[in-house]
Length: 99
Image 1 (cartoon, helix red, strand yellow):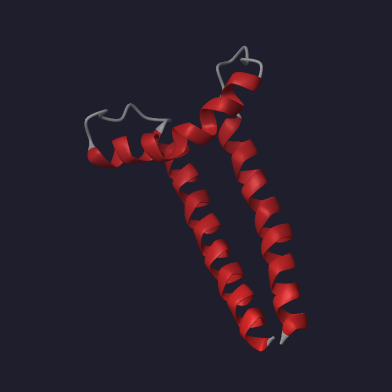
Image 2: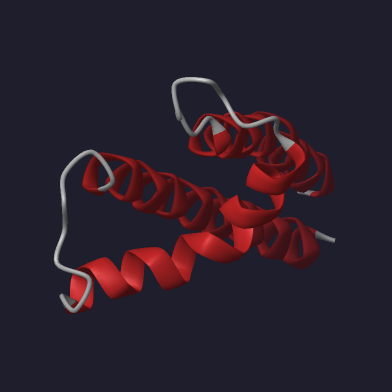
């Protein structure tokens, strides 16, 4: 059973880093949106392509603010924090019990 415990521990570790990296991509997208970025810049294109599939459905469900503020990155960051605290910790706990 220790092999399964080690496998779950590795999956939890990998998932934690993927979620952390995606949170930084969301933050970079939010910071980029404060300025007028060049839409042909490859980094800007990557940030939009990587985040738009997640942000756009949330943006559709939120009422549009009077001041034009986009709260969808905040909601996604909170969801990522929840997943890191709940899912990753649960996987690590199960992995610890299997060792």
